[in-house]
Figure 1 (cartoon, helix red, strand yellow):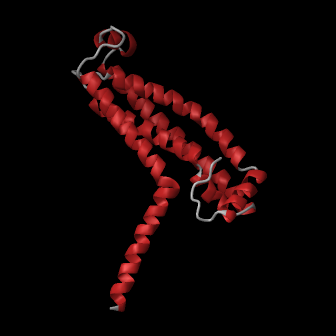
Figure 2 (cartoon, one colour):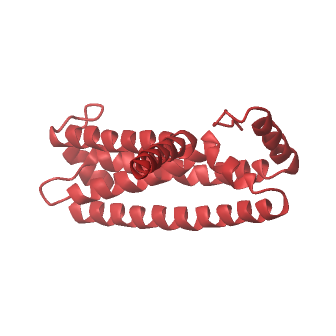
Figure 3 (cartoon, rainbow, N blue to C red):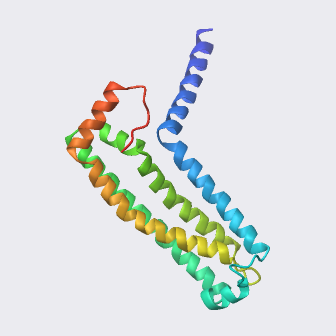
Length: 198
């Protein structure tokens, strides 16, 4: 009987830990990444049905903007690899900076860094851009060149690279001693609050 109660309590603790993980960090990125996947499906459907863009046929856009299926495939492959590489290097360096700050101030710095909505949005935007690029890349062939989807990938890539600048500033701003102490103070006064605004 005691073993059964322990198993039930352990199961409840797992569900609670999963809920806390989604509430603290995984919730917003999961929704944004899901939105990217749905958006890629919508643009691929538009490409599949041949909807013209501002009255210009897709074939003319392909001929003047992308060239061919091979050129589009090469463009998407380069975009995917560059976004993934830049994201991994950038996030590694930023997390290293956060960890260094945490050693001198408090272990709460890392928790606060992950809880901040702006960080979650930027992380998930990079992951969403990489996912949408891979989804569109997998659909390209000689008979089907996705115009809307490729243009969406390019737009998301430009925004992602701009977000690197935003991420650097936001991270440096969050690592200021005044901000860290203020965030720890707010968290101490309201321990039931999970989200911390920047």
